[in-house]
Image (tube, rainbow over all chains, first blue to last red; front, side):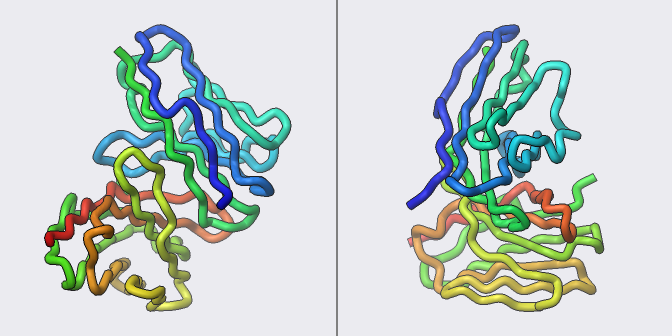
Length: 113
Length: 112
């Protein structure tokens, strides 16, 4: 069964260091999302891509976060420098164009120490 | 300002009984609603959805009810099974803007 692949599953980094997450969506899914989920809260959208273009990054802290999807397939989310408050689960999801139902990867649990 | 609210952080139900999870929303422009289920250390999994043109959608043991006048939806699981123990998220979107707005989740515990 097709699934969204994310790596790494877990990441521990020191504050002020750079960290990157990778996501490979389900084949054929043009829409890709990066979410951040803090324990006890619902997922918060950071950025949404349609193919290689950013559709919505209004909630992305652009001073330290960046995201790219250069060839419209896999995507990378980067944080530089990481702060203690960035500790969270980072979820990638994908969907077919025009379909709200998104399929999620297993996420990357980031701990900043 | 939370546009989607799940006011019960947790719910405990006996196996075999009905589980009812509730969700309220404030934005009357929302016209599509989804429920996701999440196990620990995994990403959310889509469960069931409903469009605002309907007031009920059923899929096996899962039924979602929508009350537009009250801006309220609920997910019914019957009968509840141990594997249903998870966090359930309610999410909503507005028309062609497919960004989902999520509730904080309700942790469902099914007791044997």
